[in-house]
Image (cartoon, rainbow, N blue to C red):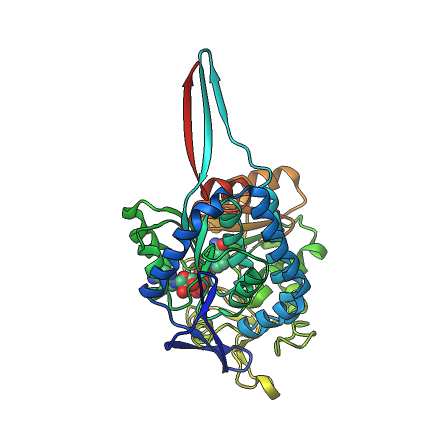
Length: 477
Ligand code: NAD
């Protein structure tokens, strides 16, 4: 059985303590991953501290050249990485091939190029000149979740490295495979030892050791709001820079003037892509009352074409949920919604495919109506293939329903009315609003949420600002 080791100071470290890694589609153990603790984190930090002076002082062109090389090699091995991601996470292979791995390559190229184009401010006044330098921070911690494993891992480490930091990273213990393969690429491409270190393991052990380590200057974290709260509480008194990308309960708002032919497939995609395991998924569908029946009918017909099953089957729309625990959590949330008075319009049950995937963790795409806005299914993140539907009568009511959750990550608005699109978008408590589209990502734009969806923004110049420390120098002329 394959054993996935820590990657510290340019080497893969043997260990005696392992965690089983499951293939979600079959429910069986296919590998083991190293279980790191404070000891491995301390070694990784020491290696990163040693590597920092040389890496940060290298010209940006040289740092970028290495990241471009890694991106090129990842592109050459795209199919193998897509296969690994699908095996490890349960998502359809076609999705890993068209979304996860291409986007990981794009992350590397985008931030490698960005490092070549950075600039800083000057503030001149009569007799005075201020200019601002932006220094790399030093050693930074990057902690990522299981839903988009390599996509979010590279989204953090690429800007951190490009702007001259060294990194101690921890992928999710549920999906450690592609990060480990990625370390092999780094070795092959000549990334100096200690510049990127990967410590595997459980969050409260390896993850907490990263958050608590006094030499780590910043934490970039993507994951649940509960873990984000712990990190804020722990890293805050240590004055670490923090970027927290947390949960969401995102509304999809459909007005009666929407182009439904365009909207329906996108609404369904927003609800169910990646088994609904995307923080940006539109898990609350708000529909103007006059078209609610029509939208529901069309959505139901569309979702009935979805196929749940083996992620390696090219015809599969929805793969397996990431873990047995998560599978039971999603099924439990559906049962709770029924107890709260909800009606299951489509789905609602576990799926047991025949053959190799008979013991996998599959759930039908599920649409639920008739729930109060305050019930658990409309308030708490389910993070599975479940969408609730609520009608509204006016713009005001739509906005009130949309904002009536503790989260504030993303929203999508479907209307052909130009001024309504602008006015509703601006009043939504969400860091990201899409109009007549969903999850269209331009890496230059600020990415992140408000309220319990986190603090800080990533992407574009926001990442540059996060991963550097500004220093103003004032000269009297
Ligand atoms: P999680 O918080 O359980 O784990 C995320 C990472 O944090 C993992 O690597 C985990 O090992 C680590 N971790 C757990 N406890 C820790 C601790 N005490 N100290 C340090 N690290 C710790 O989240 P998850 O279940 O892996 O991911 C799903 C969640 O992530 C959902 O809530 C989803 O909305 C959120 N998410 C948010 C975004 C975003 O950009 N806002 C993107 C993807 C996922």
